[in-house]
Length: 157
Image (cartoon, rainbow, N blue to C red; front, side, top):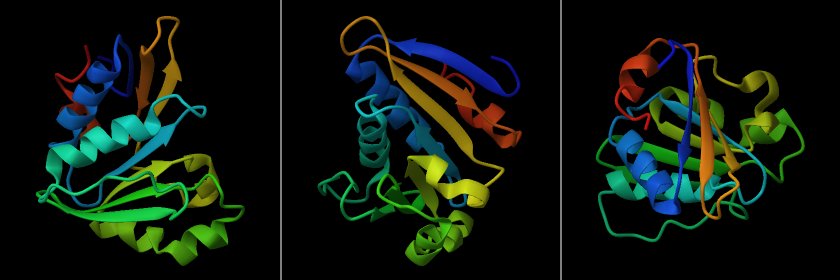
């Protein structure tokens, strides 16, 4: 694995979920995961697996498409799952309270391009894309904060 990126193929939705769950147990408050990719790329699927792996209770994990933000109490601290698809300005991001959550919660952000200049420099950026085989996904991870090198060690397949 390179110091600042890797790309891997997950052959099934289950493999994508396994990666999400394994990543989830390694996250700490202040960690921001940016989930990028086209509609249907598996962003919410990965996020749900990650959230379920660390939830304190057996609660439903809906997509935040219409609510914009879903919050959870997890074994690793507060977690915010946001879908910014419908936002049109960074002012709306600030109104959601995401800037403060970046400091003291685990944040999963779908459609992170809506963050603009508010994007945390220390975030882990995961870009998902459908692969030729049905259900397969390519995940490309990039980061600049050295903490991700250790957090991601052993997760690349």
